[in-house]
Amino acid sequence: MDNLETYNRVSSLERPLPKTLLLSVYTLLFFTIIMGAINFAVSAIDQPVLDYISIAALIAYILIYIIDGHRHRYCQHCGDRLTRITRPFLLTSKFLSMEGRKQGDYFYTRSRRHLWSLTPRWTKISQQSLACHHCRLTEEKQTESYEAASEAEIAQLSANTP
Image (cartoon, rainbow, N blue to C red; front, side, top):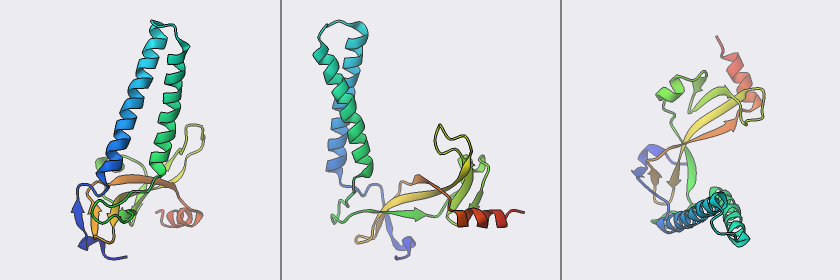
């Protein structure tokens, strides 16, 4: 992979049409769910069809949200598939207030991955952004990525503990 410092930064890389269509569908389904909830709470119109429509809209909203999270993003300039790249990790006040340590481009901390997990485990946090290697562009926006630390990384953290 090329040196990321040579890439130009832009505010948005993803094609605007899929984002706009998904936002429109989300908005339509959201208002359908809200109107169904109001109708159910007030019981103004006693028609079970409206309740079924709002339940179907809720299921569709959840499915589209899951599909949206797993879909591929494409560059608006060349049409190539965008990839996630790890940006250099910047320690902000959020991470300075957390217990953990920074090694390289990652921040390691102990956290509970799910609500039902009782024991905290080591988590590796990185800052990522989208990039198009054909156009040599990266997005300005960075997102945090959380993943479980491997056994080798945990052993390395334990070895470096003062």
